[in-house]
Length: 452
Image 1 (cartoon, rainbow, N blue to C red):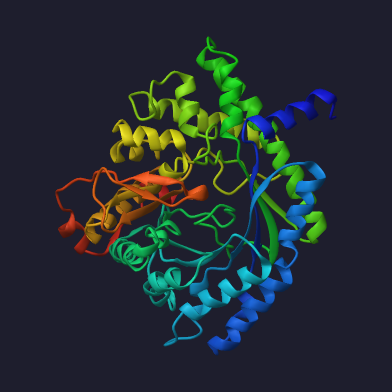
Image 2 (image 1 turned 60 degrees about the vertical axis):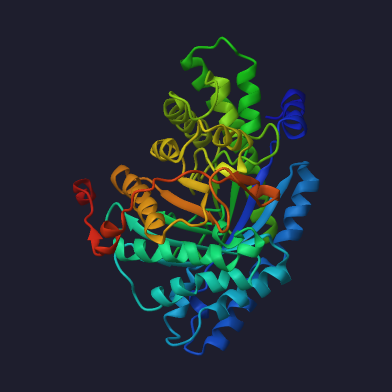
């Protein structure tokens, strides 16, 4: 039951501690839009999205007014477009991207995710054409996000897809070099991708999901840090308990918003993703939570242990607050989107190698990391392979979102602005993995994939 203290506490969290709903995301199945005529398919896609999501932004704004809770983004995720492209061989899948952009403009949403392909065990009809069209699609649109799943614990890692994605990431950055390589910031490569993720750039609407549903992604790193500052001498056990209690409160707000959005839109409520999603804003940093635990700077020795505890406590607290927790759920560590991570990377304490270690215990993986513009595609592929291996072996979702900063070198900065922030160009290893990447084939699934 709500009391005056609970209400005042929530108001303080919103006003002083950067608490918000990061996104409400409507997932829409486009399987009934498949047509051998790509123009007819695109028209069906546009019509269905506009019909289902036409009121999404309006409803989000209504909920903001009702509850006084900021909802930063209103987004849409759709069926992986490669599945629709498969019915139109020989056609350019970019037509679908343009149809999605037209729908985004009509609905007024921030992003549409789902210009995607799932190729963890191999390429099926439509997959390769879709993947090769990604650079053009992200060049000619503004609000479209793309993802490719190249591995899973059950199937292993598709190294042919890994090699191709190294080339695609580089080409996407090159095509949007005049816009700070923004295309690469809207492209993510997954291992063990989930079907109900509300966060971009990796959101897509999986084939196991209903025709239409609403997901909520909460945030609140600032709230967790503020809670920890009140207990400077707490033990590790006490810190974990504080985080759990705080995560419960944050997730409960997401449950409230999701249930209300479901009611107003007349679609099922999917999940609350209780990930701590940072922003470049002061006081909204996951890195600063880790520093509040006792690290002088994020990235120093002990960072992985602190992050593991944070991730676990967030999940334990959040899972009790919602009827359906899903998505990715944990702590995001996107370098350019987190003020503390940016500072640590600029200082040289947070390195690519340390970030890779951290991804073994947190939500997702190497996220929003700026690398030198002259990076070889094979090196990008090798970084993707390393991260996918962590996900495959540990039965967790991992991802890579690298931004090759075309024309920039180590020590310079790439500026995105807004939620995407800015990122220092981080150093990479000079030695090549090209021979390994060019072998092709598939890394077999680990032994524990045989569990049934």
